[in-house]
Image (cartoon, one colour):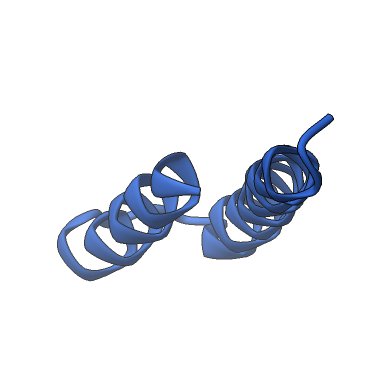
Length: 52
């Protein structure tokens, strides 16, 4: 889940400091990466709590 936070920070900082022509690519790619890493982290935590 920490990786999702790092990606969020990178996307926000890139959009603030970078002068990119097509910023939507960063937002879409970042959003997909955030969702995937967050879901993977939550899934791993859920398995640990069940004792599996």
